[in-house]
Image 1 (cartoon, rainbow, N blue to C red):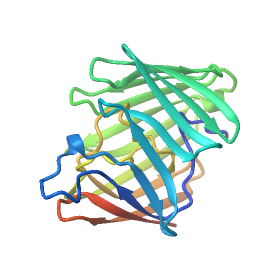
Image 2: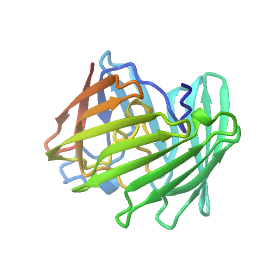
Image 3: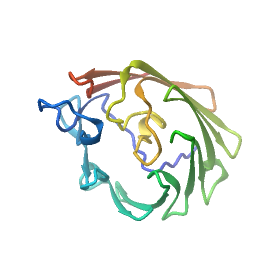
Length: 237
């Protein structure tokens, strides 16, 4: 089954370090002024970098400067996302609500999506439509408890169903709202446009495909003295 995602790609590295700002100062950092600027894999290679504008909005997400990157531009209630994935160029135009969250989007290939949120700003439903094949269109339903997204049920228009269950360490706060594996596993759906991030750090993700085969992610973290994540290790079985 072809599964086409908005801003999706796979990570190879299982251990990554997250570089933020203001962690080496004597002041207590805050989520508002501490941004992730890079992700380093277990070999020491800078596998991802992030750039922001003066308002702290993401403007560039780069994996490879020539072959895999995304740029973000903002105007009124729109964000335009241009991507280059190994020569495959795509433009996504998204409409934002008053809280800066995506309500709907359409890309240059004719795919479109719609997002719905609860009163607290958490994504609870997502619709995705393909102009080509029924098997590519789907609706996903998210459940939230205690400030964390705990499950997703993804129903394809052809009747197939995928489920994902999420487990968190309630003692570990998700202070910087990490771009982590909260909603789409390796696909990094955790961009800031898709609603509130989970309150705590994700420690386990169980994905079950339509054939009832499972993939399990176990995630652990190394924190600094301010409880900001500086390293994340992922074990996939």
